[in-house]
Image (cartoon, rainbow, N blue to C red):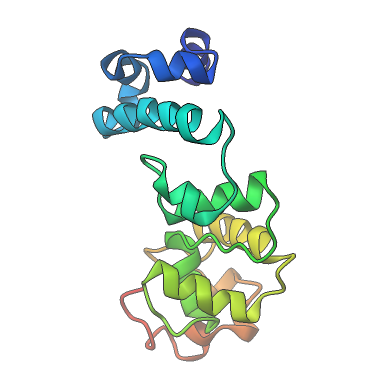
Length: 169
């Protein structure tokens, strides 16, 4: 899907001039393709008209871009701009940081970001969140925490309470 999409629209300018319906044909398999294709085209247009064709690095500017929410904005800040202190509060990060007792168990991504920023070294926070994603896919899954093979159980609130503190996690 991606190679064909970028072959057809190789530049930001090409995306900005694209018909969202045509873009949708390339990204159909990823779900919600109509909204995403419209956002891609409108985002390209905004990047050209308001940001000189460059992706902005500030949270407020990133959140103005069509289709960009906090998670995507934090990913861009952390992975592209290497901004210290970035916390990507996705579903895995929220679940596992709550189970470990690093946060108070809130499901609110902004609150999780703030609580993790208070306990993580800024230079490690982005990488930490990426590690939690991998850990959440393999060991500490949403369906069942595999505490019997978890290397973090000595430090885990979920393990020490038998999973009772956040049953819905």
